[in-house]
Image 1: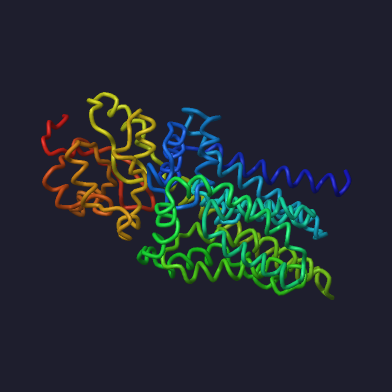
Image 2: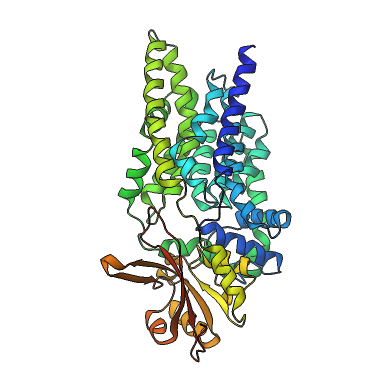
Length: 465
């Protein structure tokens, strides 16, 4: 066999191994993606984002899921395959991009990307980051292929999915302008495609679009500790980050340096970040790492140095992979979904569902119930930022009557019996009007919450036993 054929076999084997590993463990999980799929369902039912329900992001990702919902229909588990397939496509595009730049080890890039800890752990959840990264890499590849207008469109799709893609776009545009590259078609395609996408939503609900997608984020308080987020990110893949950051200073990687730097600056400055946000840095790190490895090989003694780097990377990567299998492979699994939906189908259907956005939307779709008031996204920050009023929503909910879903922690030996609801429901309203109907066991390795609680909340209760 020729080297070319062996390289192609390795690329195929890398992607196929990732697909087998992830798809063979596919299951329903908690996460923001459940809320996004419910939003997609609502769009198909004639509801409009921003006007009929709260959406904290620009609409492209939810519109993408709406298209998928048309294909997938009621087979909701298939949505869990979306991030896995998207990441595989991104890995292949990174290979094509490096190949276009004549990086001789480009065929190894899909394996390095897909089996990095960040991609392994976050591809279990369809949060939108995978789609954003795919659009960004498509934009880079399109530009390198001479399709500047198409690159602008892909950048637009990335930025109008999640606003944390904007710093990367600004960085890439700044590089083009600084290097005096032609940008007229690029900018026109970005602006025109963005205008076409946003115009209908702005026309129907300008104030809500502006408030939900922009001003809301400035009102959000500090969230998860940045020290904890960065500690996990760095400790789980420091060899890749070290190689990638070092390679940024080489001439071939300079075109992605501003995008990387501005993305990192945004993550450092923005008050409320999550681990998955940092995934936007991974494709840049992988691309730059391979450019750096090629540079090492070009120096005297480079082969020995590169072998040493490879040994360290593989040893650390194996340890990181085992850590993923041990602690994160089944993280967030919604084991009790079938039991909860079966129970809900057996009780009166006069009450809508409400609760944590990680569980209520998926449970509603599976049990053929509605989400109360179309309040789909109940993330803590929505209420902490005063974008939605938790007291008004809670009062309205008990006036109509709802089934409330909560994450519960029950550890008898430690005398712990805690119901988590105060992030999205009023404590005073809960204490006066809600009664626990049933708890469903949902054990977790990394979270204290080990039950899902179902409560009947109504001012005139007839509690279901």
